[in-house]
Amino acid sequence: MMSNTLSQIPLFHSLGEATIKAYDGRVRWARFEENELVVDYDDNSNDVYFLLSGKVRVLYRTITGKEVILAELGGGQFFGELSAIDGVGRSANVTALNRSQMCIISGPIFMELITTNASVCRQILTLLASRVRALNTKLAEHSFLQTKHRLYAELIRLSQPRAGHSGQRVLSPPPFHHDLAARIGCRREAVSRELSALEKEGLVAKTRGALALVNPEELNKRISAALAD
Image 1 (tube, rainbow, N blue to C red):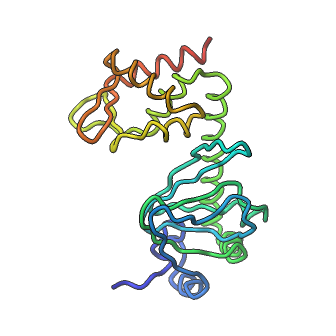
Image 2: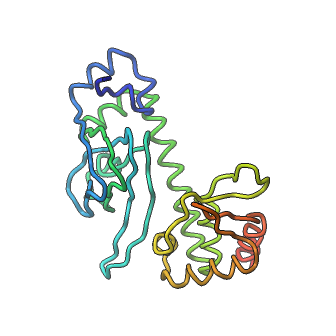
């Protein structure tokens, strides 16, 4: 069985063997079970977590108890870097969606890695830029789009091309309605209503173990028209 090493983490593939060995003894490895809390909101910890396997959900909870799903991350991805960079408490909580294996790097060691290795630093900056762009897109959607158009956009984001069906996309497994609601900031009933309307129009279809977007081009047209109004 292969021992755990930073060479398993995509972010560190550019590091030399000697550097990898030097840091391997300075990090921790841990397993988290399904539904186990990994990081809680407002924690003062500054560790950075790298997923080797499994999946986690990043969730923001308002003071009124409302929840917004910020992201779901899988193998090769990481989280917690903001607290390592600025020293501020956690801005969201992270829960394992299934059994997950992670490498945990303390904030100071993470900062040492990115400040002494230009390629790692560049990758971090690129990732942060992409996250800012994604947040800008979501902010614009929440500012200018109705619930149904936000739902169309989220369905397209979560989908993949549907094999054997040119132009179609698919979400597999199909998302729970309450999860979609938490992603776009509305009630579950609103998601159920809009999905039923799309199904009646023939724009989405339920298949075995999936939700198919039969005409994503039409959904994109509706989003564009709403933004233009």
